[in-house]
Structure formats: structure tokens, C-alpha cells
Length: 610
Image (cartoon, rainbow, N blue to C red; front, side):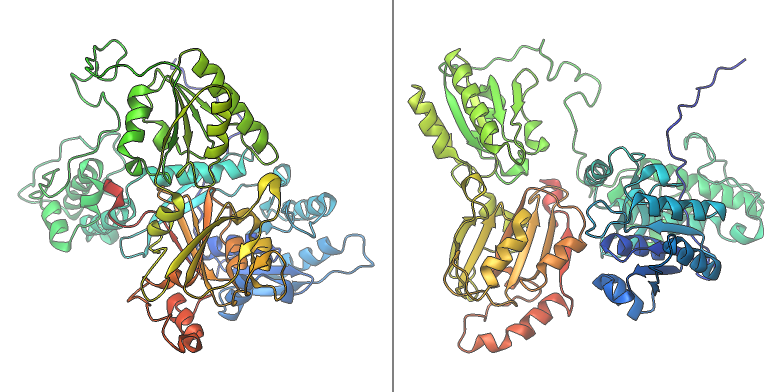
């Protein structure tokens, strides 16, 4: 008897639902917050009709839900409650279930961060009601009440920004919802940008390959996914072949192309390319115009197994560094291509121990040779001072043992990197520091979002400040000056307080005039990294925009001023001309396309290969 693996319970049955028509049973959502809007959008993309029940009245619904209701994309109803009833919500939900005949139910007002969170007793009552009617239910932040979980999903776009059929989803079975978002971003970032377009083009190729068999004899031919390997030989074209045989042969060509052609090649398949492939004449797997593949490690092909091995002999004519030295390095904003030559040299050739700050990205840490001891600062809210002292004490102890110690910081260590504190501390303990500057995220981060920190006609000066003082104290922020760009580091988590300081009429923590509410602002998260996100808006709407974008992606930085829109589209470099302020509202409308904010994700074009 064959032996098969035993099931390990606790996994989800992963299904991808898609309604055939919007006339089928709708999705019912209880709640009116941003999460409810996200659930509604996912259901709409799956072709479901959506009914949203807004507790306390539809006027309490978030901006997105109200907008979708105005556009007749969703039906927004008041979730009426009877205060005299001990089970009013269940009674109201029963009415809506019977009226709408819902296929799925989402309860979103149980979100742990809700100010008026639904009680567990009430949520359990709603869950029991749905199960009694055979309607699957999902209750946010209460996994034991859920019949199904919601994956952290990403839908890929084509090169022109249009959505493609490709989606990637991660499920942690309720054990790490926030972590699932990070894992999803890492998976998405590891895939080439062309992968969504590749799926879209291959979908067109499949339809061409099936041809008439798709309708006439669909069950008679073999799909390209039915064989365990695409390498099964493709039969030669017979003198006379049926529609099914013709389609089957062509579908096997699709299988081979899907398996072996580069994503970048698949993403640009033209109609002529597709016909060439399906004729069997266009199956050359590599095009001369494509760049050579980037290797992910030293042992990528036969004969390289010794490369990178500790047993390999490396001859280095340079003299060893003197013992007991401390290097203080800046790793730049995050992209390993922005490391200085000096920083890369110290990290890869000189370090015995690397003491790294928490926000230094993994892409930089991977450059450190395997034999080097790497320690990450245990810095988290409330422990910043303790983690800083721990790193400095460790550096002194290790250097005194004769080791070459590298203190690795993000950006430039002298720009809010506490470099001065460490230099003085090490000096007090008889150790001098080699201070190597890095590319400051304050200057490089905005560039990755298409924002110059200074621009003739838009920004003549620049101020960099922090959003939080020593031990969490409030800081004094500069007042508004039209020709000046303000960059705030470490301020995203305190955005509401920051906005109040900048815009309030009488604010002692601001040195100067209040900022107009239509002033452009950008929040740039994980600048220069593959999962970079840039959110642009005005001071009036940035808080709402940030909330609507879901989880934050530290580290983040804030850019405020007219430089933010200066290079957008055809450019806007006339904001410093006389009487230009009268046109500010119109400038903002053109810049944002009539919306309150815009979001862009990923690196600018061209950085994928660097």
C-alpha cells in the first residue's frame, strides 16, 4: 500500500470566489469604517453586489463608502437598532439576511482599534444567526467566530497601470494578520514588475490557442496545466487534425512558453508574437535584447560551488586594519545601490562585528559576509534609550577585545542618527571613531517619489527637522514660508499632532506663520526599497488619506511644501511668481486630478535593474 501524508489540522481551505453575475446573492457587510470599505472593494472586484449596513446611520459611514454609494457601486443602509431589545442587532441582521439573501457576511465593527467596538457577546450572537441560516461569516479580530478568513492580497498591474488577473494572497490562519501584510509585500517585491503583464498576455495566448475548441469541443483537449511537466513532447501537426487535436497541440506550446520564457518577454507579447508561438515557429526561449539574468547567489551554476565558501582561499594584498577600531557608517535610505564605496568596503572586507540599527533593511545586511557577527538593536517604542546604550556599551566592549566594530545606521548617521552621542561616548572610553557619511534619506527619499527638495521656481530653501524630541518631547516646528521645503523625519506616527502644530492659528510650538491647508504634502514610506509607498495630498486631507491606505510601512518621512508637486506631470515651477497664491487651489486640483490624494507604490522605472 502506498503511504500518503497525514493531514495536519489548522490550515485554511484556500478558495478564490468570483461571482458570475452581480444578480447573484450579495455580500453583506456590517460596519462603516475603512476596513468595511476595503472588504466592499474586494467583493466588487470579484463581481459581487455589496450591501453595507452602517450602525448608527449611513451618515457615519467613512468617505469611501459614501462615495461608492453615491456612485451606486454599493447599497448603503442604516443598521437600525432597538435600544429596548436585548438582541436588537441580531433581530436587525435577521431582517437584512431575509431581505437580501446574502451569500457571505463580514462583521467589521469588531476591529480592535474601533472607538465603538462591538462586544464579543453581540458578535457571537450575529455569528450564530448566520450559521443557523447556512451563511458563512467573518468577524474581524475574533478568529474563533469566523467560518472563513480573509487573505492579505495584492493585485498586480500591467505596465500601463491597468489591473491584471494576477493576485497573490497570504493567509496566516489568524496567527499573524499584521505579519501577513509584511510577508505579502516581501513576496510582491521579490517578483519582477512585468509578472502581471505576463499573466495578462499569456491569458490572451491561451484564448488564441483554444480557438474554436473553446466552445465546440472544450472537454476533448488537454489544458496546459493538466500535465505535471510542460516538457512532454508536442505531437507534430498531422495531415488532418480535429479541432480538439489542433487546440491541444497549441496549448502545449503555451505550457512551454509559460514555463521557460522570461517574465519581461511574456509581458510584451504582441499579436504577431502569439501567432508565431502557436504555429510552433516562435519558441526561441531567449531574446538577444533581454539583459542577462541577475544571479541570486554565488553557486548558481555547476563549477561555482566553491565560491563564497569559507574553505576557499582568498588572497588580499591590503594590510589588515588595526585592532580595536570602531567605524560609524551610514547605510543610506535603504537601496544597496546607494551605499558609498567606503561603506561597502568596510561592511564586506573589514568588519568583525556589525551592530546594526533596527531599520537598516535586509538587502543591506545580506551584503555582510557569513562569518561576521551581526547584532540588531532591540529598539522599540519605550525602549529607544535602552537600546541605544546597549549598542554603545557593546561597541566599547568588543573594540577593547581587539575586534573591528561597525556601527551601522540608516541614512546618514549625523542626520538624526545620534552619531554625535556615540562619537563622544566612545571618546570618553578611549576609543576614536571613523565616521563615514551615508546618503541621507532626507535628501534621497523624496527623489524616489519624484520630488526635488529644492527646485527653481518652487523651492529656494530647505529645512530638515524631527517630529519628536528627546525622550518623546514635542518639538518646535518652523512656520510657513512659501519658497521653503520642510522635511520631517520620524513624524508619521505623530501626524495628527504635527498637523495641528503646523496649521493651528495660535500655536506656541511653531516658530512662524501657520501653513495653509492647501499646502502639498507627501508621506514616503520605505524610500528606495521595492515596497516603497508614496502618498501625496494636502495638509487638509493627508490624515484621512493615511488612514485609508491601511497599515503603515516604517520607516516613513514627510515632505511639505510646493516642491512636492513641482515635477508632477508637465511640472509646476511658477508658484513663486507674483500673485501666484491666487491659483493655488487650481494647481492642487490639476495635480491631484480632482481627487483628495494619490498613492504610488514601488520604485521609479529604471531602478529594478540597479
